[in-house]
Image (cartoon, rainbow, N blue to C red; front, side, top):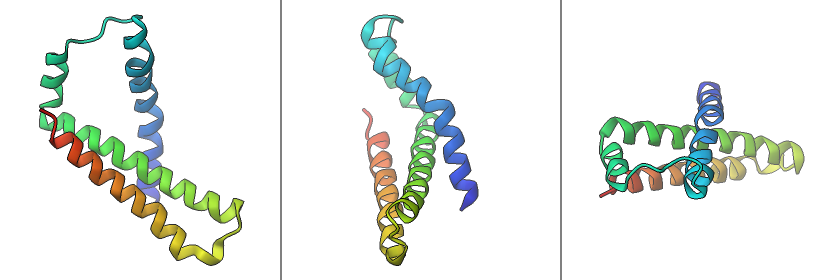
Length: 108
């Protein structure tokens, strides 16, 4: 469990800021010329890229779920609802991962 939590935190800290900077700021504001649509589709068409993006999403969501679970335990003092909180946190991470699989494998 701790390995997944740690891997999710490290990958999220390394790759998500770069992706957010590029696709949320640099490309839309014209700081960097964006890649052509066809090139992005070609890159996303490679199975290793899809697996890598899914792994990034999966580990980041697992990291969030674990951190949010213990924030609720310690911050709101709801340790008496441990099963429900854990189920909701990790269940939402699993649903988010399933949605990521669906979206990544249905890229045209």
